Image (cartoon, rainbow, N blue to C red):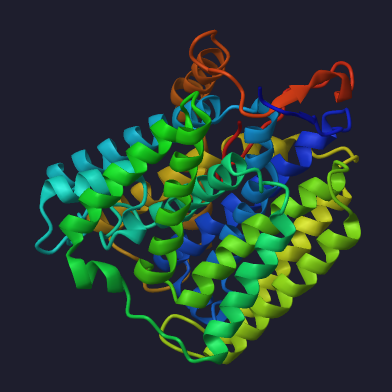
Length: 435
């Protein structure tokens, strides 16, 4: 028999979801500016980046939001199989459409294809299908896809903790990861980029990882308790091996990214009565201190300034805190609407920029009018992809995840008596999307 856990007490009202949408909308705009400024605002970008790393600001906000809501999505369902069905049908359809469009643009010669070196097409394709390509030594077809690799690693870790019944230790996990990041910097531990790929070969690593990931997901979704635990642990171990030993960001930053996501989970637990605010605050203080300390001691290197990274990180944490503080207030519909489109905005904008850069070329001077025009072109396209791809696939995912015989037996059953009446379905965000 499976045990029962009380469902989180969730406050009513649209503002409960609106603040998350607003954060996604803000983060999406900042990421778009970060990438489009290369093309349209080069002078302003050169002045801004040493002081404020816009890319890190946007993705840290996204990671905090994902950490806050994605584990709650799994625990609310109480079933790993339903969780993975929901995740796949939210992430993959739009991802597949954008990747296909990027390949077509490359074949037509209107966008530049990345250099995959000697890697075979099969290796590159399989690495991207796992969404772990950033952690498998394979260049991303689109630059922004690297964050989805960390999202996927986070999913594997969340499922691992859930299957071994340690999912309520998110604050401790966040602290452990943050301290490990600081210790690695203090000890001078520096690993080469994609060290594991260089050691065993990218092709072999991609093959082993893809099989391990498939087995992990299938076993964790099984009805047998033994298989569930085996699958969960296998997926978690895979993520914990790849992030430190085969990432392209510094070791400390990869650990900080995970710590930030689990910090978001700790905040969610405190808000919904499954932990205390004091515990979440202590975890937050440790994560912030270790992240800032690691960035400071890491020093200024190519494409990184400690000042710009630290400023961006602190502002991201403050932005998330401000959003949390406003969760019961009315949120402007412009921000919530942009948040709804944020996943489309995140994936589509680099494709449009690639086409522009290859056909027309980057500007040598600032052109704010072109920057605004680019945004005016991007948003209607994102509205179209959301309505035609995201929304239908999400609706299908919800139906499939709740269909008898598909969702399976919950590993943790939800006590519905603890849920307030008329509760709206909880929405989630992979950086940038809904549950």
